[in-house]
Image 1 (cartoon, helix red, strand yellow):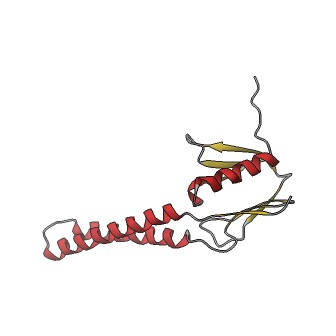
Image 2 (cartoon, rainbow, N blue to C red):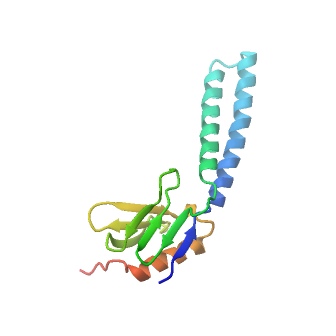
Image 3 (cartoon, rainbow, N blue to C red):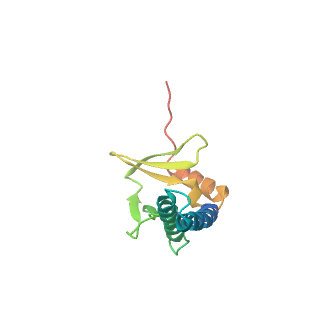
Length: 152
């Protein structure tokens, strides 16, 4: 089995974060203008909250940018999963450590990698550019580790 790489590229999420930051910038400017004219008693607080949210959106927008080797790699020895919001090295899991692979959520938009001992690793679909890339990753993992059967 060759090494297969599935890159994280959350383009729609990044666009939504950027548009949200732009809206929050407008709301911050509006609140600052109201605070300067002293027309509203809580305008300064509103400006501070919207400015903080704007900075949080911009931080998430920056952290979710595509980077080299940022994604999920399936190899002969196991799975390597990069961490979206961390500079830490990717998690390397051997095939023996993984017990099951399942889709979670109402729409199956979260991939759950369950360990043999305790624990799990969740990989959401919104980290990928298209649903087809996510579905290809899930099918490649299920090919290697079939989902558990729930027979009664």
